[in-house]
Figure 1 (cartoon, rainbow, N blue to C red):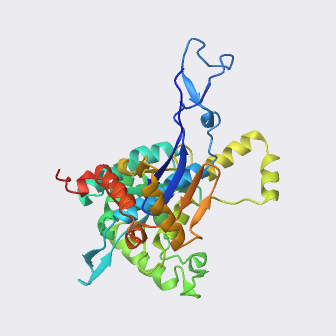
Figure 2 (figure 1 turned 120 degrees about the vertical axis):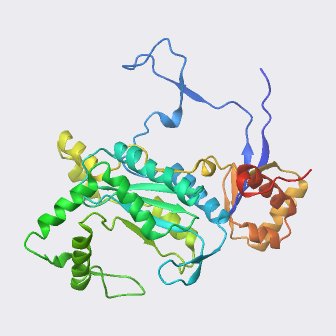
Figure 3 (figure 1 turned 180 degrees about the vertical axis):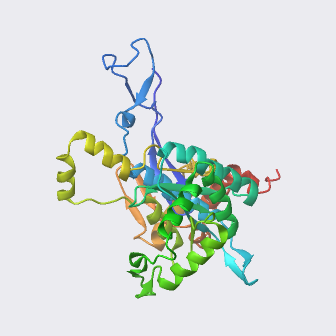
Length: 371
């Protein structure tokens, strides 16, 4: 049997450098239980241990959080500031990333899988063709009304009206615009109907008493809806992130957050009949995939290199610069340091390793290196 000689290695990412103990032994798998119902006893298929019970219950796992965080970190690193002209007032502003929310305009009448495959996938396909979107991360969540909605991050500027028109057209093929029209006509069958709950206060640190949707806004929406035949609902929200100090932390938090439940809520749920539990899960939890990204933001391994005395010297320089940036474990160490700091500290080996990886991972954004 061949000897497996482990070694220390480093991986360099936009926001961190990881030093880890690399084993060369083959990955361990847990064979499928041959006596489990539905298992082919003649099959040689093996299953990774962590996939034995993979029902997510609508929650982002710790591993998924790491992958989402890394994808967002790379997306922001690759997103260069751009001067963009506002189509409404003609003024120019600096743009870096988009944070978009897509919602269904009427009651959900299809499964989450159908919505993702028939609507979201088409939106992403058209975004690639129309706005050259090549970097993106999306997350699916359930709203309080039980409808699925999507958060999408991309580095391409997408005009709001164009995006809303495209999303509404895509929604329409499954009947969600017709459903919206029917709901609005019923709501305003006797003329304009004001809904007070839509005008409740919402709190923001910069606007402690800002109306969510007051009387005048509802009346304006009513007139616009009448003029357009209720066929262009406000199903898209583009969040302003230009003035957020730490965009990366904000976006990671938004896409990895989980609903928290008290012990009392958990106890009450567990005491419900199984049929009711399944019904609530369908209403409150997204079924199937919770998130995904563009292919070039998947499997981000970073620039990898074996440790040597020169690399160790650069790692030590990082530690001396900020001894609080490190997280220690028995088999790995994480140095929370960005590429700009590595350049300032003249860590040429770490930077060269990372830049070589970036060129190979995103060849469409970089000219090939002349050798």
